[in-house]
Length: 300
Image (cartoon, rainbow, N blue to C red; front, side, top):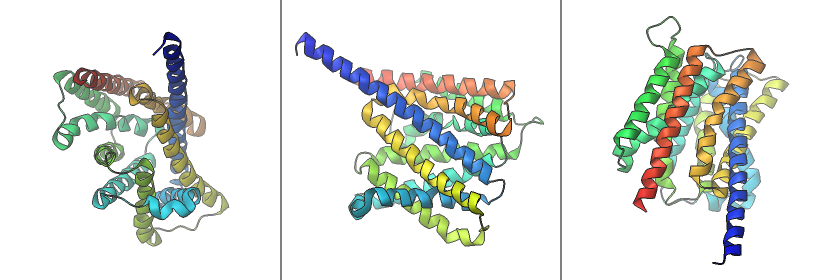
């Protein structure tokens, strides 16, 4: 390759990386918008109904987007794993929305930062990956950060903190199954199953929890589904434009959006301990991710 061609290729990659980062930042912001709508809805409607709206209107969006290609998109080589993964995502959403209904947005978001650290720990028994002492140290530091946010044994601690903690753990299993599926099914197939299974499962139970929405309630429920679908689309676009090593660290910007939205919508400002714990979680997560990239380069 000539020097000019190499320079042009490098510029093209830099442009793609910038697009990937922008898509990731947009995806993360939309995820927090979704959480904000869910928390607002939880002041009037049951969590089950909100989760139902999240997946039902997401499925409507996908069906409109795919139209005639929907049956072909549903073809999968690993149906049981697709169903398990989708069910894990529904459980994650339900647990997190339950925590959101009782906690500040930033507090719930901070605890969810444990997710990537749980994934690292679970990759050992489920994916057969080797995790060195440095990464285990990062995981341990993240657990300390989570304990600072939750503060068990103090007056600040409430049982509601356990919901996002459980959501982070279940979400880690969800990501493990996603990695397993990435070798056999397309991202669109996996995304479609997520919304389909979520809509079906939640529809079975929603009559027992139903509260008739007013016009504003309906609009917000539709928004929950549309924003949820759009956020996943942006996430897929981000990883299609740039390598994970470039875009993944920007996923931690969610804590910034969560603090901002919580302050603007509810006037909530996290205390110093919550911000300290969140900071430790972000740093430890980024360190673990850095070590994962180092290990991948060493294997080449």
